[in-house]
Image (cartoon, rainbow, N blue to C red; front, side, top):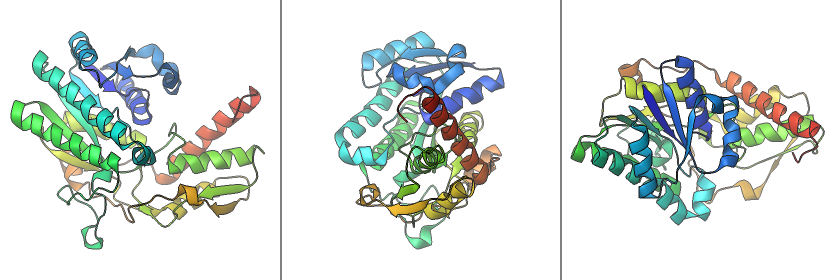
Length: 327
């Protein structure tokens, strides 16, 4: 069985490749845009077929689908950082929507018999009213940033191509996920890196934060990618599924979990530049539909996720420090 992962060099993409390879029954193919990002794959590069592809270029995507003829497509590639979408809304919308459109058009015109998972996001729900939590799949969309709008468009485009052309598409709305290899621009990873730098004596004992009162539903990325696989193995084409832990904590509680695993004492400082113009107060997902269909449940605790993430940054910082590089 051949599986194509778009955005394989990204956070979830690299973990999905690792999971698929561990199964032993899947040939993994992945797309990337920049060779510099491939370092996140590490030794996995030796066991996957890597193809450079600009997804917003229809011709390039047609060649990709024609050449690979995948049985499964996991469409993960996207501009997924909310602050970037606020600064570059047009780029975010074009990148995320046109890239997916080209994939679906290529599969349709080449008549490739495959299953497609579209990685959507809990950001689509946006402003959630207190009586709507935990969030079900039928909750109204009230997006608060261009990234969320782009994901709604991807979501509905997947639905439309299933209804109009019969493509075997399953949409997943993953809530916040974290774990080792998370990019440092995301809050859990940013805090973990700051702590690792302090532990190595490379910065003063101050952790800079934004909004600590926001409530989030975190799942380990390794549980998320297992859910992605199950969405195509057991999910119903045309359906959409929330993927979430079903539990929530404040960002302050997340930070305290990390600090409890640190070997230094730090002070916490609010940085106004880390505050967003609009933010979702509470995000708590209801993934009961997905669990009932697939039997999925998270297996990795939040404490373990935070410990693994902190150890990941400790390793990176020590390696850079010993090499004399910029940490």
